[in-house]
Each structure stands twice: as C-alpha cells, then as structure tokens.
Image (cartoon, rainbow, N blue to C red):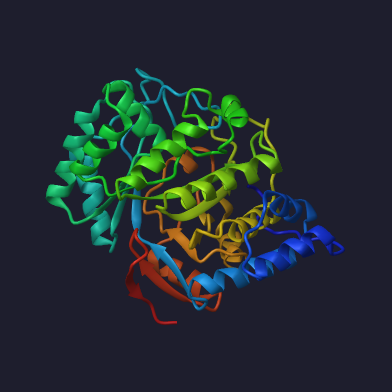
Length: 373
C-alpha cells in the first residue's frame, strides 16, 4: 500500500450500523448482515471504538504482545502459479533454490541469539520433495535447537500428502511426530472458491484449506488464521471468509489468532494493476469488523509488515492486541515490493508510543518477557 495515512470521512450514523454495534457491545454474535452493514456504512470512528472496547474485554487493555521469530522460506520452487505471488520460481528456474540444512541451522542459531522462540518455516509447492524430506529436516532441527516449529501451511501440507501418497490424517500425524508444533494460516487468501479459482486455481479449495486446519485441531495442534483481501474479492466474499473461520472455530477449536492484510502488488506479480486499490482506512475497518465478528478468537494481529508501522500502530486502536513478529527475515512480502522491518528495541518503542506495555510472547501467547513502560 502506497498511502500510509488513514483518511476518515464523516458519515451520518446509519441505522443498520447502530443496530450491529449495539449487538456487539451487548456481547451478542453478529450476523453476516451485521458485518456487511458495518463495512458498507463506513463509520470508521464508531466501528473502531466498538472494536477497541471488545478487544479490551478479552485481552489486557494495557499490554500489546509480539513475538521474536524468523520466517525462513526453505524453497521458492512452486508449481501452483498463484498470480498474486512474486516470490515463487518454476522448477529448473536458475533463480530457484532449496536451502541446505546448514543454512537453515545458521538462521535458527541467529534467531535464538536474538531472543527468538520460534521458526516460521514455509516454502513453495516443490514437486520433488516428499514427506521424508520434511521428517528429516524437522527431526534434525528439534535434535539441535529448543525452538517452536511453526511450519508449512494447509496448501503445503496437502501438497506433501498428495506427492507422498498419504491421507491427510497420516500426513499431519507424521509431520507432528517429526517435530511440527503448529501450522500457520498461509494460503487462505479469501476462502471463497469463486475468488480462489481466479487468483490461485491450482492451490487448495476452501474446503481443503479448512479441512487441514480441522484435522490439525483434531490432533491437538494449534494454528493461525489469515485473510488477504483486495484482489477480486467483494465485501460479501470477505464476510463469508470470516464466517467460515468462525464456524470452524466453533466446531473444532484451535485457531490462536487472526491476521488480515491487503494485497501487495508489485515485484513481478502477474496481477499487475488488475486489483483493488485499498487504503489504510479500508484496512482499519476490516480489522475492526473482524474483531467484532470473530467473537471466538482471542487475538488479532496487526499487519505492520504489509501496512507500515504507523498504520500498524493505529490498528491497536481498532481491535488488534498483538503486533505479530519482529520479522528477523521475510521474503515473500518483500518480493512484492513491501519491506518494513523492526528490531526488538524499535518494536518495544513502537508499542510504548501507543501508551501500552510491550510484552514478548511465544507462539502459544505465553509471556516470555514484559518490558518496562
């Protein structure tokens, strides 16, 4: 996103907005129609105030959490051809790679030296890697380092199972036994098949993505949920995405947190300029409505990595309670032309500037360290 400023317009209070906000403040569950009314009403100030109030009911109002981890992309070879991705390379492309284990080990050691607690390990859909590759890698990591392995994504898990001729249950069971601790929510984009068939036709369907998370939760693993909006999706699509997440959390709990961001163009993405031009105000409204609608999610992360630090801080006033990762390393968003970075002192300072205490957490939201105000 090019504009870091949230532009707010004065909108006469809309009756549907008022009804939805009264319902949210009373602790009632919002309907899809309520969420759409809030998004269409564009009353950012009132919706944001309600989201902040709800956030302060379920998490400490005076604290904001963050994690120190590293996002390592073990390969950029991929066969799914998602047209919004500027990171992947086709098999045999000279710019493609698979990181050797010593390189991954060195990155883990650097992460631990900086006080990190987790490794976010994700890559492309490599056609030549089978489950034995991941089992060997995960066991090697766990044998050497006390680090939480937050790895793969639902689409990667399905890809591994397909090429290894395994069921979903067996794939997750074997990965978990090898050391996989939790699964990130990558690849969700918008959980509406009409959208997915346009932007990522070779990736998972909505049912498949949700199926991986359901099975992971069933086996006792926790996961995170994401949404990338702003390609060809409508407001109705975004609400449907939130509904599918809320329904699965009701059915088989396991999502720790939700994070959304706007599509980042540039860097060679095939979508080029053929996408929606979203603003910071759009992002803050999406965050606020998500907080009000996702009443069975405790944590919402601010996506400062894509939106920029100033908007990331503002998101804390619109329902977010967590600033996500310091991002010691990040390659996918950077490939799309967005490159915001923070080290731990700057993260602590950024949170402190909002009048709250910075708290380092681990992946499970357990406190690692509370920083002085």
